[in-house]
Image 1 (cartoon, rainbow, N blue to C red):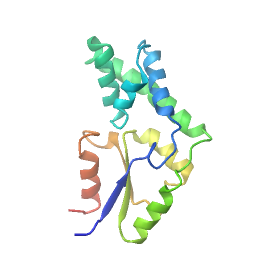
Image 2: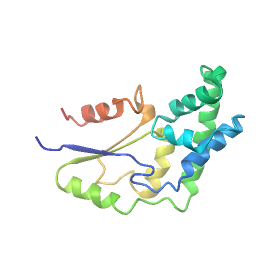
Image 3: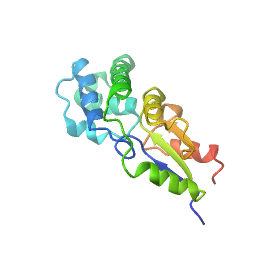
Image 4: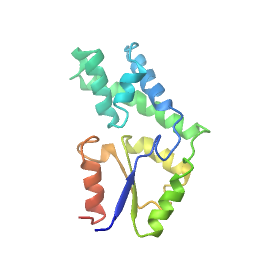
Length: 168
């Protein structure tokens, strides 16, 4: 059995994030009145779909708002707006040194390359665009957490990629 597909995360794995995601998360929580959210609690949910991550943190700090979709959505909207602005302008947005070489190596050896992320498509698009990965021949697919029913840690993104790429 040979490897047919490799899947990489984006922020912090193949792309420099400068640790700013945690900072933006906490700023969005602060803007919603959750001033006590600590870095470690955000780190624990970092790879999750961002709306789910917000709900987990809200459940810990304000359990009475855990089911309040409007409250969760407002934090998510603030976070999304801040992240898009960040990725559209941050000069430190670069591929990590090994990333493109690894993508090319796999692709040249007939292994499909995909990216998956806990970000929504609206946040992912400026990252891909600024790196030139939106049309890169060495990336076969990109999937975002808002394009499946359940984000990480559930297997939905991987399963959707495999189905789309006809990998059993």
